[in-house]
Length: 190
Image (cartoon, rainbow, N blue to C red; front, side):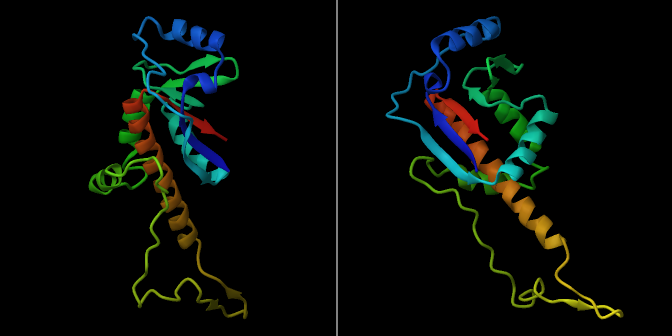
């Protein structure tokens, strides 16, 4: 399972890696990192399906912003430090806002979700209760002339995948905002 976490950068990079990263982005920003008082990492979500998260990361990669760690500094390029790719949380927010339509997220839907605090909250996607007319449609099988019975079509699987990707978008969007406010790193574990 993939995990999204907000943490001190020093929990994931050693001092030499942090210095190398800061020197790589020094021309673009004035660093302020790990200034928040944090008793430990905040695991935002640890139950994300790996395949769906890789799909989500593909959207970030298409926008040249696929990284393992996002830091709350404003710079454009993803920097490679050792085995880690480091990106800007500010740039991540911009890309997520541009991808909002790709994940079918309504702006008012996300605004309602942002009001919740990340600490101590579960980010479960609400189960939607279908209309009574729709009940059982996915379970119905169609009998074809050759006598084979086929289950529901793939559209419900696609809808479920879209809903899970929308959930990932919302979690990452809120985590990016919290990362910037707390001046802590946003870390993706895959």
